Each structure stands twice: as C-alpha cells, then as structure tokens.
Length: 276
Image: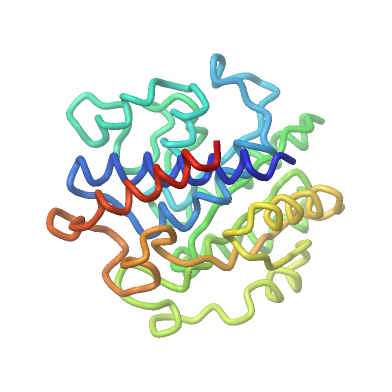
C-alpha cells in the first residue's frame, strides 16, 4: 500500500467535497468529511473498477447507504476519472448528474440509489448474495452511518448475511457519534456495536476511521475471514475542518454557516501540495 498516495486521495476528496458544497451554499458537510479516509482506501487501494467502463462486470461494488454524503463519493469518482472534476460544481443544479443523494441512474460509478436510510445496506446484501450464488468473486462494500444504524433494516442485514455465508460483503460503520438532530448517545445509543455484530456472526473489528493503514488492514483481515466483515470506523464528524469537528450543527451547512471555509480549503491545498 502506498500510504502517502492514499492520504493524498483522502485530502483531495475533502477539498473537492468542501469546495463543491460551499460553492453551492448547501451540503452535508459533517458526514462527507468523516468518510473521506474510508473512501480513499477503497478507491485508492482495495476496489477493482474501471472509470471508462463503470458497469464493468468484474468490478467491486460500493453502496453508500448514507446517501446524503454523496459529495465525498462524487469527489472520489471525479478524481479517479469517472467524469470531469469541473462537473462537481454542478451539484444539485437543474440537469446535473450529481444530485444531493447518490443516484445510480444519473452518476457514472454509483452502484445504488440511496438516501432512505437503511435501504442501501439491504440492497448491498442482495447484491453480495446474488454474486455469491453466481459463483463470482466481486466484493461488495457498504458504508452506513451510526444514526442510520437505528433503522431496523440494518439489523435485519446483520442477522441475515452471516446465515447466508455472504463472505464477499463488508459493511463499514461511520461511527462519528452524531446524527442530524444531536449526538447518537442522547437519541438512541448503539452500545458496543462491534460486539453486537460479532454476536450476529460477522468478523467484526474496530479501527481508527481516519487511519488509512488501519482501515486497509481491517479490510484485508475481513477478506481473509470466512464470514462477512463488519468494520466499526471510529470517526469524527466534520474531520478536517477544525471548527466543525464533533460539534452540534455540523450535519448540513447552509449559506453563512460556510464562513471560514476558504481559509480551511487554502490550508488543505497547501498540505496537499506539500505531500506531492
């Protein structure tokens, strides 16, 4: 693994995501920033894909079940050449291929339309099971949120996958401790979610969700198991924008809430240039 290249990709994803949302004047900043490192590992190291042929049959699949964080995924896809970077600035405009929530019918490289929380990971399980039945070795990854994990469909997925022996399936939980209205602990605590997944029959691990080496090692560990993999990513909502990290009101920003973003972007760009 080229750690520096994956770290650069994660930073580039944050830059592009913040830039497009701030230019548009609205966006789900907190969760988009907290998953940047996981997405960088997937697209920078782990997944098989072809930007010139997004529907390539041998590809690995990613279902961003927390579909409101599409800006992070769109950024990765643009950086990797699925579509021009300039198109990122069209997010949410009339006629755009980049709606606020992921849409497989519009955006090259999106494998599942998501946004209704809980439904994406259910579909991802269906994909993995279908590939297993067909005897194919494609991996299916799904990123879910900790607020999303309050949905019943998530727990149905956790129950069913081990019983079906779907070992080509890895779920990554963006455990950033916050959801739209408040902290998860105040609304509906998840408890020891890694242990719960393990009790359901998953190969479950917990890692620092901003350590790309640890994330990559966890994926390798899960792939070597004979069970579906569950990776509890301990993350910080808003990671990369110090003023927004782990504070209430960082879920979705609008207009004046983006004050100070240009300085943040300038610092990020300087950091990226220093890494080259």
